[in-house]
Image (cartoon, rainbow over all chains, first blue to last red; front, side, top):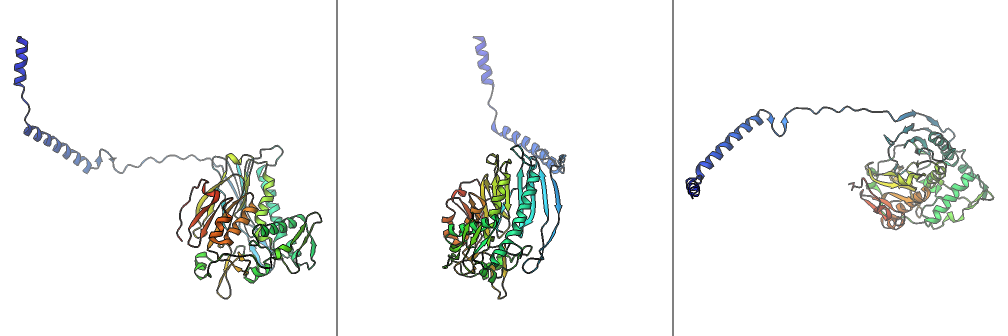
Length: 111
Length: 324
C-alpha cells in the first residue's frame, strides 16, 4: 500500500502545463527558425534549390557516324523539249543509314 | 536494320527511294538495286513526258493514224489512264491536253516557283464539284496488248501525267519485293512493301498545303499512298486569273471544289493517286464517299483537315488543326 500511496501522491504533484507559456515558447522557436532560414535564403543558399548558379555538367556525347551523304548536282539541258527550256534539276543525294540512326520518314505531298 | 536512301530529280519533281537490305538470296545490294530503279524511272520520264519532242507519248499524239504501234511502257501508261477515267466516271480524264495547254500549262514547270496558295485563294472562283466531260473522249481509247497497239478517236491527245507517277512507282516496286522493306516515293505518290515491312511499317508523313508542316503520319506497310493538291503547280494567267493543273473535265477550267489537297490510301500507288485526284475533284462531300473504303485525309480551303474511312482508326502522330 505504501507504493500505491506514493504513486498517487506523484500523480497529484504532476500538474498539467499551462497553455500560455507553451504557446509563447512555440512561437519563439518558430520565429528563430524562420529568421535563420530567411537569412540562408537571402544569402543564396536555399536549402531546397541549393546554391544558385550551378550549371549541370554537360553530358559528353559520343557519336558514331552512321550516315554517308553523297551530293551530286546536275544540270539537265532539255534542248529538244517543247519550248527548248533548260531545266536546272535538284541535287541527287544518297544516304546509307543503320538502325541506330534511321532515315527520315517518307512524305506524301501534292506534286 | 540498314536502309539505303536515294533522292534525285525525275519527271520535273523529286523522287526518293528507300530500300532495306536484301532478304532473298541472289539479290543485289540495296544501293545497286536503287541505282537500277533510278535509271529505269529516268528512262520512263524520257519516254512518257509530254514536254519532250523525242518521247514516245509525243510521237503517239503527233501521229494522225487512228491506230498506232507502241512499246509496252506506253501501252501500260495509256491503259492506266483509260482505267483511271473509267474508275472515276470520267473525272480523272487524260484527254484534256488541249484544255491544260489553254490554261497555260504548255511547258514543264520544273524548278518554277508556284504561285502561293494563300495568294491565289481569295481570287479563285465559286467553289463547286467537278464533273465529267460530256463527250467522254476517253471511252474511245482502246489498248491491244497482244497486238501492241493503241487506238484513240481522231484529234484526241493523251496526257498520261495524271497517272504516270503512281504507275511508275508500282512498276519499280517489283524490283524491291525481296528486300526487307522499301518505299518508292514518286514525288509524293508512294508504293510501299517488303518482306518484313509488316512488322516495321513506314510512318508516312502528310504535308499540309498551306503551312508545309507535317501534320499527320500514317503507318503503311504495303500498298500505296498518294496526295493530290492545287499548290504544287499554280500560276497566274495573262488576264490575272489564277490557274492550276487539276482541271474540271466538264468545263476545261481549273477545278475549285473547296478542297486544297487530298491524301488517299490504295492497294497500290496508281489506285491511291487516282483516288486522291477523284476525291479532290469531287469536293468535300464527294470526297468522303470516294475515300470511305481505303481511307484518306482532306484539307479544305480554310486549312481544316478531316480523316476519312479506315485512316480514322490508324494511329495518328501529328494530327492537329491547322488554321489557315
